[in-house]
Structures are given as C-alpha cells and as structure tokens.
Length: 378
Image (tube, rainbow, N blue to C red; front, top):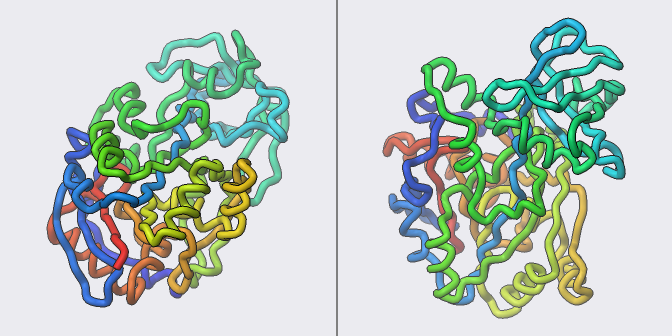
C-alpha cells in the first residue's frame, strides 16, 4: 500500500493539545467491521453499552516515565535537553542509561547538571560515556547517572528531575499558541488510571487508555467483562515518520511486550467460547498480534508470561488471530498506526479515510489528547 494512501487533511484547530475536561468526556465514534458502513457519535462514558458479558477488554498497563529532562553542561553552561530511552545493556547497572540528547557538540566525559521540571537545580547529573551506534536511534548516548540513590535507576531519578514526554507536535503547538500547562497536570492526564508503576517503561502514553475511568472499569467488570492486562513499553519510534513510498517498506522500531499467563488464559477461553476480544489501543493490539495462538496457549498452560521484543508492522491484508475489535484514537496521517487500524476494516484505507472525514466534519479532536474510535466486530 502506498504511504500516500493514508493522507488526509486536518484543520489545525482539531489537533488536541490538552485533554478533555473529564477522561470519559471525550467523544467516541463507533463503527463495526461490517461490509456496509455504520457510524454512531457517542461519548466515552457510553462505552459500557457496547460490551456484553464474556467480552475480554485488553489494556496496556505500561506506565509512562517522566522521561524528558533538561539541564546544562558543567563545562560550558550550555543548555541541554534529552529523552530517556531505556537502561543500558542488560540493565545490570541501573545508573547507566541510553538517552537522546539535544546539545551543542556533546563530548565523551562531559557532565550534564540536571534541573527539575520547574527549572530548579537538582543534585543529579549525567556523565556522557559513549555515543551509541544504533540506526534506530541516531544521536543516542550511553550515560551514567550520578546523585543520591542514583543506583535505584531511571524511574527514581526521573521522578525527581524528569518531565512528561509529550509528543513533539503538542509541545510545538502549545508554544505557538502560548498555552501553558503544569507538568504535574500533564503527568496526571498523560497516564492511564490502570498504569502499573512496576511496569514503568514507556516514553509515550498508550493514548486510547487515557479515556478510561475507575467507574467505567468497575461498570464493565460488574457486567461480566474481563479486564485483561498486557505490557508494551512504548518507545520513541512511535513518532518516527514513514518516509518510504510503500508503508510495508518502513523499518519498524523494536518495543518490549509481554502477555502474562492470566491474560493468556482469558484469551484462550474467549476464543474457545466464541467471545469477543477488544483491544484498547494499538499497543495492546500489537502485543496480542506479536504472538501466535500457540505461544499464547503455551503461556496459559505453563503459567509463564509470553515475552519478546516486537517490531510487527500491521497493514491491510493482515489476518488478525488474537483480537476482534479495537478502541483507538485518531492518528497522524501516513502513519503505521493508521495502517494498522485500516487493516481491521473492510475496504482498508478507503473506509478509514471516510471515517476520518466524518470525524473532521463532526469536529472531533485528533491525536494523543483527542477523541476516540471504537471498532466493533461484525
């Protein structure tokens, strides 16, 4: 499929740079995987009305790390900005990180003094150890964190000095329009209510999950809907634009994902009993489709999680083996996320573009803090 087949026009005012007032106050475009188009315009608060007893709702519980950091070079005083990518190597030394840096002529041995999210000095610094040769992450560095209890790892240090890693387009739009939002507000709303801090590792939110409230989850559970957890740590590659002429030529980034045995059992039982599996977000869907039914069955039977690094690219023509429906936000044009959503729909990209055109006409809000779409099974 040509990447240009996923192009659409979006008025800038429909790009959401802040979330809806309430999580479940976002709008919800509902459609089905049927041959004839069906569209309903609802609110996320209406979501339970589309579920039934026995359904399995799969959510990504990876927590977002406050991965963006700022500071200055100790030698020149020059400003630096960076983004935490993950632990170095096997993670044995929690003080050693992989980061992306925005700094003028960084050099090995330089020390970067870190500031807090509100610009105050901190007791933490990063020492540049070596540049990383990684085609997926050009400009990446290996650094060593220094400071009180730095050995506890990046999550501890960044909870003190980090800020919310909002998508670049949100930061740029806020700057253009003079919109100021506190980092604490962003931390609260750029995190799902079910995020597991023990599974912290994402540098971007699984955004479809941002719409859920404890009340919606409780209502679904009371209806007999199983809430199943998976983990996929969202990486910076999710923002990487597609430059290839054909979407299938795009080199996908790698992300770590896991299906625990309890979720594997729910998936297997749902399939056996003819019940529906609905994924919340493209990250949950990619996790499910990164494993074969046999691998998921093995995880259920052995009581051991199915885990792997995945770079799965889902495009129209993909045969979904482990899910029947999807809740997702509205994505950037010509993106791999759009391609995956198109793969779920009859007619593929043309149907998806028609739905997006409908959303534009109805003034839905787009992208990470925007509204959502629910694609139900036939």
